[in-house]
Image (cartoon, rainbow, N blue to C red; front, side):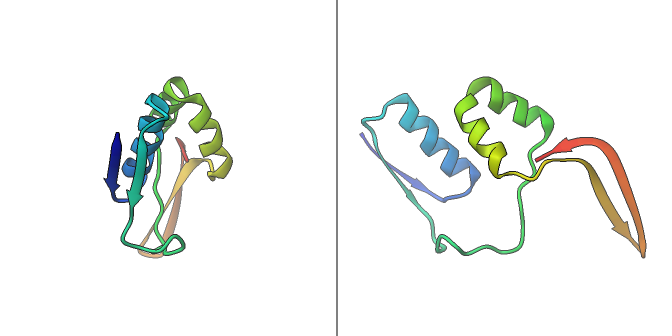
Length: 92
């Protein structure tokens, strides 16, 4: 089966991984409008629950994913010249 995925964001890329694992014979193409090195200074945050689900259902992808992540157990909020560090929120 030929499968075209429009959008190289997290959902499109992960769907490509999953569909290929389901059937390696599928011809999967991901189409992204921006060049491979185009970034816009933003990131994606995954909660501890999301990471746990990924680890439980797709350990291989999880292991590769966390190698490339910056893990934190806190967030920093800056507002009106004050900085507040809030712990206890594991994220990647």
